[in-house]
Image (cartoon, rainbow, N blue to C red; front, side, top):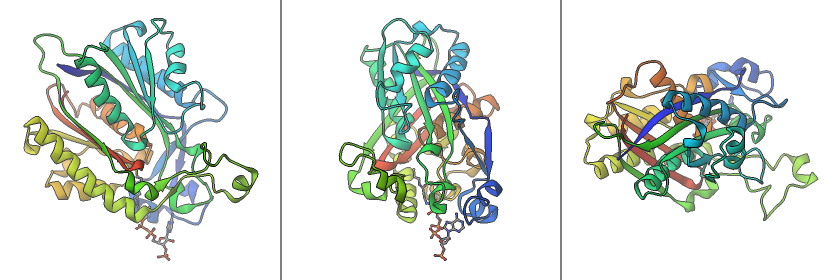
Amino acid sequence: MTKILSTGAYLPKKVLTNDDLSKIVETNHEWIFERTGIAERRICSTDGGEWPTDMAEKAAKQALKTANITPNDIDMIIFASVTPDMKLPNSASILQTKLEITNKCTCLDIAVACSGFVYGVNMADSFIKTGMAKKVLVVGSEMLSREVNWSDRSICILFGDGCGVAIVGETPAGESSEIHATHLGSDGSGKEFFHQKIGGAVEPITSTHLKESTHFMTMKGREMFKVATRTLAENAKMVCKKSGISLDEVDWLVPHQANIRIIETTGKLLGFPPEKVIVNIQKYGNTSAATIPIAFHEAIEEGKIKRGDKVLFDAFGAGLTFGSTLLTY
Ligand SMILES: CC(C)(COP(=O)(O)OP(=O)(O)OC[C@H]1O[C@@H](n2cnc3c(N)ncnc32)[C@H](O)[C@@H]1OP(=O)(O)O)[C@@H](O)C(=O)NCCC(=O)NCCS
């Protein structure tokens, strides 16, 4: 059996409110809050100290302390991000040195957008169950402020920066904490709904792209909205079916924080009580792979989620990737 041993999170110090945004683009707090549930978001410093691997270092040190283990007890790092520090080397390897891990553990980056943390936890579960690893540090860390077009009001209002982590390991004998079931997938036919085509091998960034601001993320908001609600509801049903645990038995739903209306609609589709849904989108916006681990960590810190509770992670993102996890914390 496997379990989540501990969690951690780091949020950048700088707060950007909706009122601040209204000075940059033609928008206002009421529009943003009513349509998305977001009031403010955090933005990484560009002076250093808050790069994705810096945030991960701080969050991981917290998780290591809570789990009462040393950095060298980690034998695999899975780093989920679409905004890595740099193209090469991978962020997991950079984090390994920042944490002073000297055991030459496996360091793997995954780029599955907002489903990244759930992919990471589910992969960690498999690696541990097949004996490939014992303690896996799973990271979701994003600096989306770098990839957002700050003059496009349809997108810049939605995103923020932040990091959340979890350490996954074997369940000690006699304990009941367990990752019961996992579900992962992707539907590449929806790739046009949310993409960033410029800057890869096919079309490297040129001065024209920079001048025309065509190198940023582009999204079809309405299409994403519809797919998201349907996908999140299907994810939850699928992982319940796989685990043999009914949705009624789930104590907490921790959904990807993309839009409060997506979260509420999903809850309604599932008939799941809103008071059992963890929501923190008002403070941080959509931090992609980091939303679920930050929300999960905060809910534990606030005393909402307790050991023994049944928790369902539910994610979707560009790709269109999706995934869910059902666990007893
Ligand atoms: C992006 C999103 C908030 C837009 O909400 P919406 O209700 O679909 O709004 P629309 O895009 O239809 O725009 C409605 C109007 O508001 C305007 N508008 C758009 N952005 C605005 C802003 N920031 N401030 C004020 N007005 C804005 C539009 O121009 C449009 O005006 P019009 O009717 O005069 O043409 C919503 O579609 C959404 O959240 N989608 C999901 C996105 C998502 O989760 N992506 C991440 C997936 S991991």
